[in-house]
Image 1 (cartoon, rainbow over the protein chains, first blue to last red):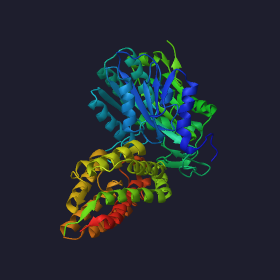
Image 2: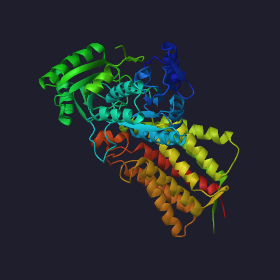
Image 3: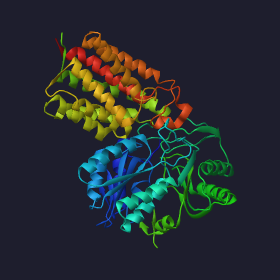
Length: 330
Length: 216
């Protein structure tokens, strides 16, 4: 295992020091492992997210004006703890309440649920949006439900813009729910990934094979298949997503995220194919992002997210944002 | 004969749990890499290590205080679903323990039952879902039946530990319906659930500690 680290034990602390050093506009609570925005939030709803580490830039890379107020970092692939989340919520609340943005994983759910109970005991209003957009997982009462992947970024962006505009917690929460429900994702991996503390690949994937329907925690996917070309894979991803959700004539925000180990040139080659597949289906992509946004350590592969938008969501998407990983002006 | 479990035995239990987790950490992580995210051993070692540090640092209080401190320590140091579930187990045990510094057999049974019910309520899992509950539920049921049959606490806890091990092994052919392993669908079958494995260690550690700390 060759990694740019001091040791697996200090990796998270070292990375947080790096975030502080590289982004002076952010404030880092090293003890509680929270990255805070220093943008003014007086009188408005605050947004708190977080999750296991290893998905960078999610979530700390999306802290700043127009997006998250705080991101709680758990150990690699392990959710943050209730005391951490409580510390974040109490610091960012201005009396207008706090929205928790949570990806649908058992650990995240349980810890954010305990945190919400503790935060409410302090008299702070809390609402939670759960993102569960991965179509690779069957959504039934017999599973933990769909995993939360790329739609999380889009929810954080538009809800952050709505909070910035002074919307109430109820309205921000409603928008976040609407956006989360309109998003679908599907991913594929060409390699496994290596959790530094473990030191070897999370699963064996022979040369020439790939995993379809992977999540973002190094778990194998739903199906192992021979490696596909970008064109073939674009068919598989788009087919899975569009079979699950009718995008009708709605404007769509598309995100093609790398999983951490694929070069951008491959992601763009993939996006060219994805774009063709969507055109063939008359799906109207009006905004897109290509890059490493929701990752799984050093896993090679990608995940496609499509969110059915409307004028309001697009307007909020276009609103200014100033974070390490997402930054634009009007 | 009424048998009593002292604070010493409870502390022994927690120390033993921590040392057994450390010994078996690689195996737990290996189980987790097959159907999860390869960190169960690492996370449990960190959490039980924090519990031991807490035990060593704190003055002896009541049983309720001790179990609450253990629960909060696990919640804040393990992370993930395991942290909140193991934490809930001890928090609920503490809430349902007598005030004071010892437990008799029926009080232990009641506290353990509350702990297991707390895990069920937090995680919404049932027997057969391939989780911790597959080891914990048969353990507490066996303990209750054995005590009701008039057997000694030590023998009953030993039977409970055996039931936890059987329960752990019963997870191997199951298809996971909760937690991260459920994403694998049919591919989760053929592997022991890591949470059930660490839960069996928890009950075995209790069995090993009861003999030492009971007083007739």
